[in-house]
Length: 232
Ligand code: NI
Ligand code: MN
Image 1 (cartoon, protein in one colour):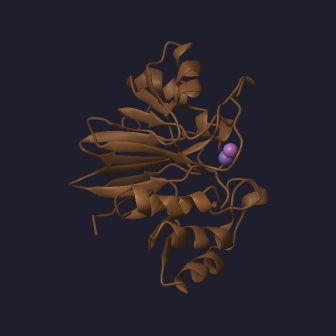
Image 2: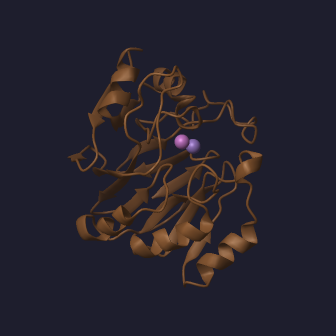
């Protein structure tokens, strides 16, 4: 799978010949002022939204209208986008559905949620996404460490990598993310939700060492960096 980082919790993952964009927050992000959201690279087929906070949905309407991308999120969030004439596929925690790129399973996240206009944002979620050829990954969304993460290895294919928040304050910090990586039985972790704002600035070396001490790799991508992760 080819992965591109657009800052904060925003990633493009190419899977099954489709482009999946997660939690677009680019134009308001002080760290991504060089990125043009109408550029060809940001033309997803699907936009996956973990919850309604502005730092996860800010550019979703614009990108969906530019690209024709379909929203995949909770029923309530898909309904909110539907009122803006954007098409989507509503799901909810515990459910899975087979799309043309692979299977999406919606898993629990422990956080809060509200749409940018103050309307109800439903429960926050994470996604486990897989296909037989390219592998499986977990996009945790904003979440605390939770015992529910132990269910993931029981109910999902083996993870090839996971995207976990590590910035603390609004989500789990890197110490809890190390425990999360043990719960989900995954050794390759991509960090997100760090350094965007002062309360979530982290020491990269300290965080990487905490994972290394448990035999795991924490990868902290540079903004706009693309990289490949192959199936184990
Ligand atoms: Ni949030
Ligand atoms: Mn957030």
